[in-house]
Amino acid sequence: MRAVVKKSKGVGFISLEEVEKPRISPDEVLIKVKAAGVCGTDIHIYHDEHPYWPPVILGHEFSGEIVEVGTRAKSWKVGERVVSEASTRTCGVCELCRSGDYQMCPEKRAPGWGIDGAFTEYIKMPAVLLHRIPESVSFEEAALTEPTAVTVHALLERSLIEPEAFTVVQGCGPIGLLAAQLAKSMGASRVMITGISQDVPLRLKLAKDLAIDYVVNVDEEDVVAKVKELTGGQGADLIVEASGKEKAINQSLEMIRRQGLINVLGITGKERINLGWDRAVFASITVSFSFSSNYLSWERALSMIAEGKIKVKPLITAEFPLEDWQNAFSQAEAGQAVKALLVP
Image (cartoon, rainbow, N blue to C red; front, side, top):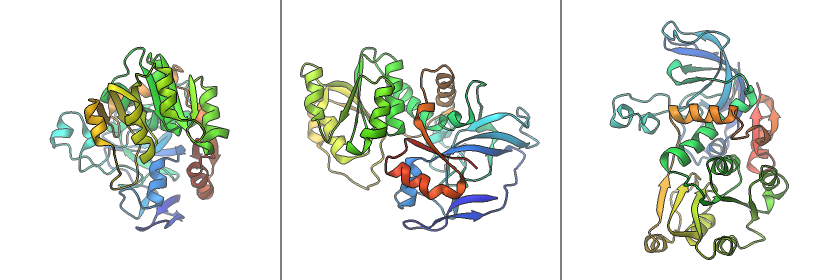
C-alpha cells in the first residue's frame, strides 16, 4: 500500500513509499482510511521541530471504515465508521494512566510520529480507542474530530469558558477557528479572532462567515488597543493562544484583564521564547496549558459536530490524493488552505 513516510531525522526526508499492509493483533482493528487531515504537527515534523521516530508514516487526524476485527475486539464489526484517539502505546500503569489521563503518559507513542499513522490506505488501531461516527457526519467532517477534541479538552476540561466572557483567540488556523466557535457556543459574550495579512483572503474571511464578532488583522490594527477599547480598558476575560508566535504570546499578557485566564494551545516549535513574565505575575494571570485529549473530549466533539454547535465542514478547503501530499503540506503551511485533507 502507499504511504507518506518520514524516512529519517532532519528537515524534509518525506516521500511517498510502498509499505506493507498492517497486520492486527487480537485487540486491534484494521481501518480503511477515508480521509486524513494535515495538521500543524505534520508541518513541524517536516521541519524537524517535533518529536518523531523515523521511519514513520505521518498523519494522526483521520476517519475510516473497519475492514478487519481482532478476536478480542468484540464490540466492533466490519463496516462500522470510526475515528480513533491517538493515545497509543501508553503504559497503563503510571499514575497518569491509572487516573484517566492516559493521553499524558510519558510512554505514549501516537500515530503519525511515534507509530505509523494515517497518511496511507490502511491503519491498525487499538479497539479501545475507537469512537463511532454519527450518521449525520461525513468521513471528511469526522477527520476533524481530533483537532475538535483537542479544543474541547482545552476549553471545557482544562479550563472553563465563563458565561459572558469577552474572549480573544490568537491565531486563525483550524484550532483557532474551532476555539472561536466553541467559545461562542458555550456562552462567551463576544469573541475576537486574530490573524495576519496572509490570512485575510481565506482564514479571516472564513471567520467572518462563521459570525465571529470581531476579526482583526494584526498587521493592520493594534490588537491590544482594540481589546482595551472594546472592554472599557479592562482587557479580555479569556485569551486562547493558538498561534504559537512569540509576539502574540506577549500581546496576550498585555490585553488580558487582571486575574484573567490565558489558555495555551499553540506550539512555538522553539526550545525557548522571551516572555514578559513579571507582567503576568503582577496581574495575577492564570495560564492553562493544554495538550492532547481524552475519551470524553472525543465524545463531546463528535456530539457538537453532529449537532452543528461546531461547524467543521467550512474548514475543509482542499482535498488531495496521497500522491499530491507535497501540495497539501505547502498549502497548509502557507495559509492557502484552512484544513487540507489527504484522501487515499
